Amino acid sequence: MAGGADSSPGVGASASLNAYWTSGEGRAKWASSPKPWTTLYTLLRKYMSDAKAKGLATEYFVRVFGHGPGAHH
Image 1 (tube, rainbow, N blue to C red):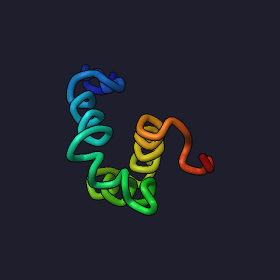
Image 2: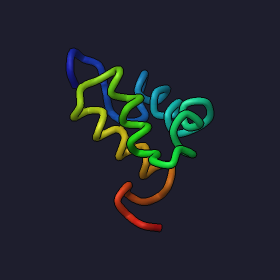
Image 3: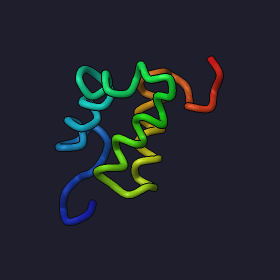
Image 4: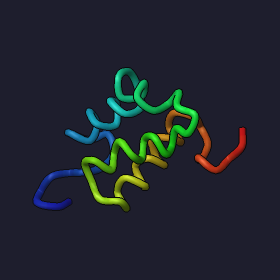
């Protein structure tokens, strides 16, 4: 825990962000794109470092589609 705040997935502010990007309005911004991972990464990169954006884009992609961005399903 950094600074006493729990940043675990699904806890506190991260729960709201996770829900935003994986359902509803946030998901609509990237999930139906021809390149959904790239679109999501680009959106997230506006708010965080390259490494964090890549990690979250992959995490959210898997949550939404059930497989990694490189898998051909």
